[in-house]
Image 1 (tube, rainbow, N blue to C red):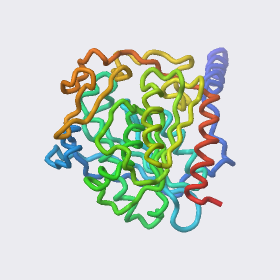
Image 2 (spheres, rainbow, N blue to C red; image 1 turned 60 degrees about the vertical axis):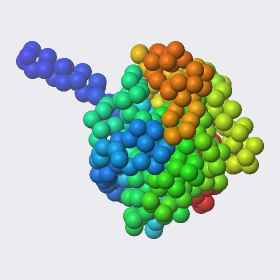
Image 3 (spheres, rainbow, N blue to C red; image 1 turned 45 degrees about the vertical axis):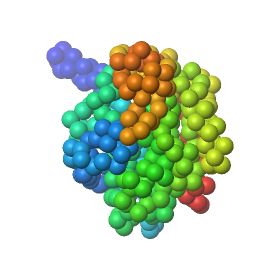
Length: 328
């Protein structure tokens, strides 16, 4: 009997340690169908991308499509992760958009390239590859019977935020977009805006909404403010929302709080990079080809969560997306 009592007591402790079950009544964010698509993309240098040179390594990347509840064809949000791959913020936003009746397309630009992340070795993967991945994922949406191809937007985070931002350039669409889709909106979260590309104020004309944090020392908001000023001067539909206490990655609900150093991660926060002739990216200070060994590249930026900023961003993004997609 003593042994049985001990076993029962142990079982009670074990059961009490289990996480609470999902709320059964809350089903709005459950998709009616989940599909996994393998799509062909390329592994290119940034110079190849800028020159429209398709002579790169062919890769197969994974795309997860979640069909939201609701009748007929649904609007779709593409989600592009950062240099660490798909983190906690991506499923957070996936659930939110599905709950709004919006399909989600989550792109995994790392696994198919044999990578788990490139934060501490950024040179391994040219940043512009993720723009190509976005355009290739749009081809899946264009032919899907449950997706409204006239209501597709892209949202990205950090390196993926940079991709979401510059995916708006008309030049890049002409070079690489074969989907037939004209994205309805671009929503970059804390992107790197340190690079000036040729013709980078000539966007598609669709709205761009950037969400950033004042203390971000991975991708400082100051460079994005400068780019936004140039876009506004060119009469583009662009706005930047800045949250005063939001570190880099602030919308990840399982991120560190307070923010902690991302060990050995490379940040170009002190760099100014320009596209020169022939699509070469150069250090604006030295005029030499940019390299992650340049003195302006810094290490150990802070990354962490901020609940207040996340709640504000959810409200701001939801209101914007509802207008763009004309949700009722």
